[in-house]
Amino acid sequence: MRLCIPMLTTCVGIASMLTALNSTAAAEPLPDPGHFPAQHWVTLDATGSLAGVVAMGDGDESVGVSETQVILVPLAAPDQRICTRTDAKGRFRIDDARVGVYGLVAYGKQGLASYTVHVLGGMGADSAPPHPQSLLRITMATADRDLSKRMLRSYGPVVAVRPPTHRYQLASAKTAAVENRIGHRIELSADGELQGQLRLPHAAAGQTEALDSLNVMLVQASKVVARTTVDRDGHFRVSQLKPGAYGLIASGTAGFASFGFEAVASTKSTAKSSSDANFKLAAMQGPLGHNVGCCEPMVCEICPSPVITVIESCVEHVDTCGCCVEEEVIVDEEVVVSEEDLGPNNSLGGGGYSSGGFGGGGGGGSGGGLGGLGALAGLAGLAAVLASDDDDAQPASRSFP
Image (cartoon, helix red, strand yellow):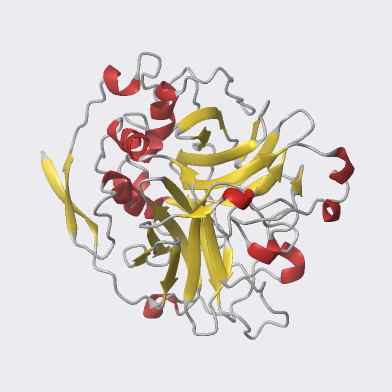
């Protein structure tokens, strides 16, 4: 049986869909102390527009990435989205953005970035101003076109019931709370360990979801150099990591995330005082990113599963990825995954990923749980695909059984 599923619909205005998310909405508290390598907060500029830049690389060597599709998916209405492309210097501007919580998708031939972004409205009714970052700086994880297509090829899309949309709440961030906690440079521990936590944006009371389906991969030059799993609360760690520029890619039934960051060596002199760990930051956060996150966990808000249809379409159709174009995708009811697709050591295990390296469970391939376009059809199995391409001798660090 073959079904036609409309994946992308014409972009329309979203102001009416976001009336509940305005600049006077009560601010949710920031997460527990941690360091944010991806920029999750941005304010509209003086004209009410959202401006930004997409970059790759680390430090002074970061460069803007041209011809990159930038899409904002409102979590309150995933079927309605705003899109644009970067110019020759990686810059973009969205004139019809509104205050609200979005899933960000930035994708091109050179890389991918995806995580949650809270768009704030500048000086509102709050007693304290939101942090003054009015430029959205996006650092992509390096994933070339071939690697991105292999992510999808191993798991064909399976028709599934779309998970319910949660009412994700806008989280304001005040300057004093975040100015020392944002920046794409993360300091490793003395023994080279990286600790982190992946989270969903704050949802309405009673709407929670376990994150232990997520698999985390670190990539360099489109090659996997480390991988691990997370616990129910999204905590993970990677050991024996060397300093350098990395991309993080995380996938599972709960959602998806991808971004670039730079891991720097531990410096005992700054371990107790982040104010002494200043650096010149070119790729992320501008004036707010002047402190290295010394040994704090790396924290990222992932895109919830309703955003995955946009990510899948962009990965599969990089040349024609336009969220303002009506497109139909032919989906088979049943998909067989061959050993050639997965590799000899990556056969599917019941409930999720292979028994040889990933314990994600639920939703991957033919295992139990949700699968398909509504719940990470192609990208839920991303870990198994990348494992077959991993020729690095560094072992995976599975920190949580």
